[in-house]
Length: 81
Image (cartoon, rainbow, N blue to C red; front, side):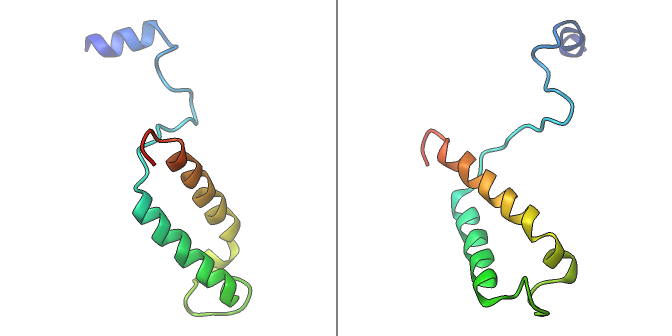
């Protein structure tokens, strides 16, 4: 209860709306996901009608790329990459 009251009094400690807390990125999992994305992109699965990629994922590949790029940058900024 005390922590909630202190958080309301001092707004500098709480995150801004829309700002999410970054959890540490698992570098091995990220490497596997990036490798899968690159393999599908090189084979043309995102541009053509390939069953390995869902239609929804095909239209949202830019968001997937942006998420993977930001996660990779966050992993590189870790103390021990």
